[in-house]
Image 1: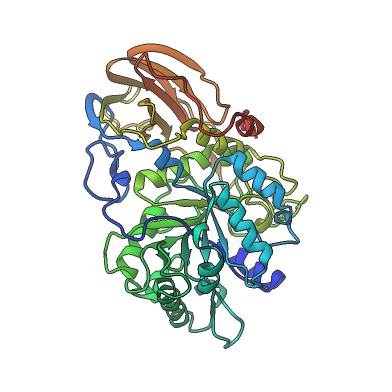
Image 2: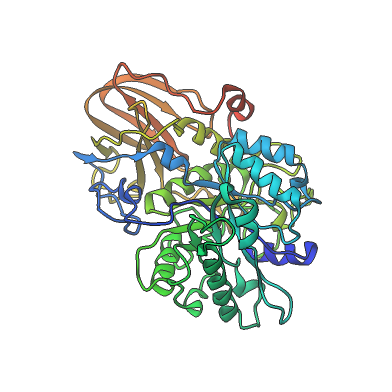
Length: 490
């Protein structure tokens, strides 16, 4: 699906490029990936299923709330001058209002000073870039790499470099695997060389491939630090099952490209489009459903141990009044830069959960009981949770149903009944509830050791703290927070 976007970009703009993400150059077991399993494990396992919800209190070490926000990124096209991205002032403004600190893009094949300056400006704003460093060339021409540009002009602006994007799709019918591995080797070699100011101390990601092509590429562990996947859900819920699921794709990349090693894996593209009248095989999703799914997507990926996830994409590139072109309807913003419900929902989630510095990550014992389904076996048993902690010591419990809210066949919305979940805490705490799809204000406040709440299709955030903790707030300036605040209707 994503590859179609890129093929079209090649045709229209004569260029193919995208970006990547940030991480230290050396990796150990990612502590955050397993923190939300009921019984913490020492390494990143595939997404652990919760035991049947029950009243027993289980000590859980929370994920750092700031670290969770740092798993969130978005794709941009900073050198697409003839699209909505040509208005860089709006690109910058909306990124700051959205609250993300990571973008993915492609190194500009034209090597324009304007592109480099835009990347540096965003880095000065605290937004680092993951950049695709190799692009497919037509015919038998060698595939070019752009590592030297990154070293000369963008060294302090980078999160990571990524291999060629979806070569199995863009270069179908050619020996793409051989060329992709050759390009990957060149990226890694140039990045690690001491020339041009020294080695780049950022991770090097492998190329992202279509499902089924991972094995054909083969082992790249000698030329990449981490894997990349594009787990588009195809209009289904974020935690979908099957070979297209993010868990399945993550496992295949590790098995076939890294000889089974538990390397970090990044979802460098994923998302939903709202081209409601398309006849494309990739089904559309209503704006209401995307607003529900988007925060759940990032929570599910973080829970499973995906290092960072980039939504595709920041804004629709051009107007599409007929809503027939899939490639023009993936944005969190419209092409005129007005916000979509999905953008508001994600912005509210980031603002509520962000923290100015890392939290203490102190274990909290808590229990969850689905009162309508106490053994966790019935239709309302699929309640998911993720515990986070901010620097002020407050705990934030994210709860949501693993439910489907859109019928891809009939193209209609689905509303599921809420599950009544009892939360049991180790002591009386100040409790405030927030629903990011509706806004940023607390919908309920109480002081309790045990309480019952309704968990629906969309994410519920419950802040739990001692009586002395400060009120909840995001870390962004009030002016930026106010711009996108409000309900994500749709």
